[in-house]
Length: 305
Image 1 (cartoon, rainbow, N blue to C red):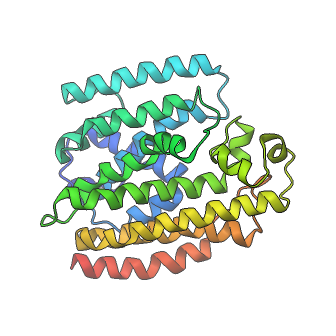
Image 2: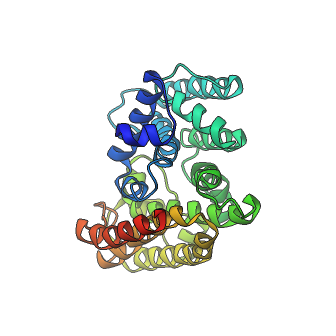
């Protein structure tokens, strides 16, 4: 993280600045698409958005680090200990943890609702005990905490000062859900190898698909139709979120529009791969990233001017 960004954001003190830099590194390593989008924000806002995502990735890695030798019970104990520490730090308004320090500072500065952080930690805990969701509504209980709250946490940082927060929040909620559902479609095979299915079981049954069929790793007609159904539903939620960008501060809009287009590109990549997501991880090409991000950068600079 550049000194310019930290200075512009008014972040002082070597330990606090180091915490923000650590969050940025986590985002850059594990969330390349959104990291690229955050670079379109004014320097004064970038560290705060990166802190929210860096914290989320840190907690997620406790649960999903494939190189970890811990059992699920041991991971649960570690996550529980971390959650107690985080919520205690948020209550005190300060932290000594190298990642949480930036989170607490961001929450305090921008008056982020602590209940959103709590909901996120609850969903992370669910990943260690829940392996499938019977209905779409059941899945949405998990997705609220795992993704929708991330969008809601960002509203105070990105919102237009003349627009009530309550007007922006439904769009932020939908955008977080859409991002997560796109990831679920892309990661069906990867999640299955972790023992989880994030597509509603009622949807699988509708198309004559079960866990064993997915585990064979062959995308046949029923699986292809199931995935096409999930892609279509995800796009409907994307469309519902789009009008909310106009309610953000002008200098924030290009960041979120770029994230929208690149995450939406995940769905395009799945279709272009003929839904072959059981044995591989499709990705948005670097060429498409450049085609979306470079013009957006020009517009973002003009908006800041």
